Amino acid sequence: MGGHVILFPFMAQGHITPFISLAELLHRRWPELTITIINTPRNIQSIQSSFPNSIPTIRFRSLPFSPSEHGLPPNTESTAGLSFPQFLNLFIASESLRSQFTQLLHQIITEDGGRLPSCIISDNFLTWTVDIAEKLNIFHSTLITSSAYGTAISFTLWLHMPKLPAIETHSLSLPDFPEINIHWSQLPRQLFVPDDNFVSKYSSFLQRQTLHCFKSNAILLNTVKEFETAGLRMLEKLIIGVPLFPIGPLLRQPSPPSSSSLSLSLSSSSCVEWLDKHSPETVLYISFGSQNSINSSQMMELAAGLEASEKAFIWVIRPPFGVEFTGEFKLDQWLPEGFEERMREKKQGLLVHAWAPQVEILAHESTSAFLSHCGWNSVLESLSHGVPIIGWPLGAEQFYNSMFLEEVGVCVELGRGNREKMSCVKVEKERVKKVVEMVMGGGEKGVEMKKKAMEISDMIRGALMEVDNGNGLGSSLHGLDEFCNLVFSKLD
Image (spheres, rainbow, N blue to C red):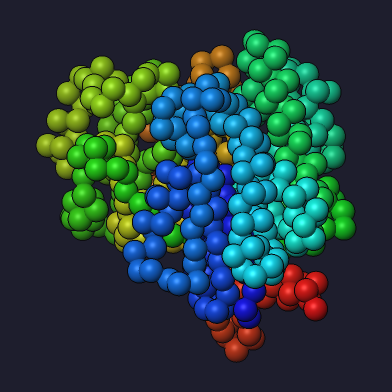
């Protein structure tokens, strides 16, 4: 296959990682396929470092970007370190890349002797690229990096958002899925911002990207067909006439942070050595992702509940929500007095500052469960290793991922949100202790969750198998083949 595919992820690590994985997957399947990954300069520098061995058929191109022109801090080219209001600035700034992206495409076409790229695969937050692809007669696909279920709910909310009141007393049924009820605390965070102009701009951006997505020639999803049957049906109901191709899980080991912040973190070997000292399935892994955190009072209660449970844990700790990180971890202010020392002395807990080797931890036999914000990459990483989840969603489609996982039977939701007025579940010491013991204590609920997680692990791993018990490719590789056949049949 001698074609050329353009990949354009949104400027956030949770979106970039699946695109890197997709590039690697495409290269393994079709080594002769040319792949060009496009992004802003700093992101391209980081992406390129993810490919330590130079691959001639994988190229990297930068788009000029000036953060200061969009009200962003200097050197900001991704969501890392941004406050929630600043996310909107980056969203709007991403649309300003239209002319640079168009110019770069023309340059690439000229360099390739006038040959058009076979396909543009853009992020679901960069779907304005569909108009450019259409004008140049290039096949366009959107890669949705989140779950099918969560995306379907998010899409219907974004499309109907002006009609949805911010009700704080009961749940509401979804316009396109009346059988599904969501609580007011699971509505998009931007609805609750007092600034009407902010709400309008945020909603308009999401609506634009959703409607553009519906114009794509095809949609790729970072999920597994057998795992998300219901979610895929929901998306098919919304996106009529556009073929959907589940090709996940698109996973890889995330890169550690920059050297300046890495000094705050333990090495991968230190985490693994600590796990090696514990019996199989006895350790709780806790991480709320790289973008968010719980608030200070929740952090206190979580710590107290963990200590009371007497269960071993690794906690990737970040400053509380709303606290600006100055490079110094003030654990004495954020946690019960003497907590870290007691956990160290009792060998009960390991507190890791800022970053930990998540995949290595989840793959370790000592890991029993994952207390997670339910970001989709983390969900797939956890379930691919058969690790059940204690859910604490904090924003975006994480609320709906948690709903879905509870329905499937691999999750118990401990908390919801990190703002006092938005959380309908008050997380206290006793609740933490109860939920942790229920999931990890060897009772009926925990055993059933583990069994279900292992079944899903087999399902996820099977989706990317070259040969599945003599029945051919796994469902995701088959979906990727079908997608490529569609793309290249359009070129004949």
